[in-house]
Structure formats: structure tokens, C-alpha cells
Length: 230
Image (cartoon, one colour):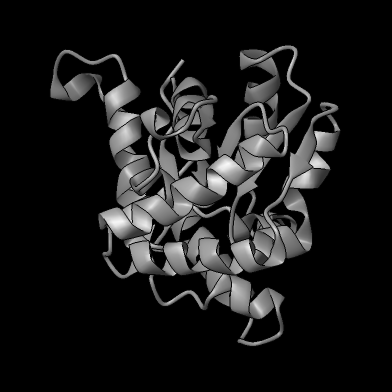
């Protein structure tokens, strides 16, 4: 059976796109160039801000998301993955615009969390305000009887500052300490794991920074994409 070509709908942001690409390379069992998978990336940073659109403060990213997905389909991708959690709110509409499947990172993360930690009941979510508003993580994790714990309102704004800081290239200790502090508050509230629910967060928050398992949806998506392609 021939290997499938992966399409990455990227640019939200570019460094998160690189992170997903790198993880696919890292987790692919390969001894030479030819053992790796073919990947088509459309890194489109012109896609409007997803959170701003959800909060009715900016233009809809949907036309650009659809166009980028269609570009990948035309280029020969067999399926699409999206390294942006907030963009998954628009996934049903994006899927309607193409004939090839789009993997759902959030659904796959919920499955993986239940599989990795069978007895888990509560997870803490670090994500964009757009993700909190739409409750897309709540919906998927509820199917696996896992409760989502969100930060307090003021801490949601702090998480957003961290996300935009990382997008701007700020990976300083100060930014890292801020996100660790909020993660610890979620653990204090009963979180048995932390979900890095924005693709910028794994760029700064690492497993050794928290006292409970850190679930990285980008990593989950990379592994699932490899399985599907091979």
C-alpha cells in the first residue's frame, strides 16, 4: 500500500508549524532520507487571528483557511493536519471545502489522554481565549468522561499574553515562569495532567516544568499523522 502524503495547513504561527514538522521527522522511524514521509506545507501567516474572530473583534479566518486547505488538496495531499488548536473551531466548515480528510487534533488528544492515563478524571487546560470561549476541548474530552479545568479569567488573559509573546519570539524565563505559575494553579485545583492546548505553549512549557503529565497535542497529532501516512 503506497504511503499517503501529509498536508500541513500552517502559519498559525510559523514556529508552531515548524514544531509539528520537526516532530513528524523526529518520530518517523527512518535510517535514511528515503524512509521519511512526503509532506506538503502551506505556511500561510496571512490567515486572520482566530481568537479575534471568535470574540467578534476581527475578520473571519474561514475563507483563508478554506483556500489554504484547497491548496494542499490541489498540491496532492492525501489528508490535512492543522497545528493550531483555535482553528479547530472552524474545522467542520474547512472540511466541507475539501474532499480529503482533516484530522482532528483535539479529538485525538482526548483519546490519547484517556489511553495514556486510564484513570484520569480532570485535566488543566492552557489555551487561547478563543479555545476557552468555544469550549472545543470540553466537548471532546466530555466524550471520554474527562473534566476540563480552566484558569481564572485574569489568568486566561495571562495565558494569552504568553501565547502572543511566544508568537513574537519571546521565549524568555519571565514568560516561562508565568505559564508555569498558571499551570501550578490548575494542578492545585485538581488537574491530574496539563494540556498544552495552544501550539505555541509546547515551545516554552516542557514536561519537566510541571509535576503532573504534560499532554502536547502537537506531539499527538504528529504521531497520528505518521500512522495514517504509513
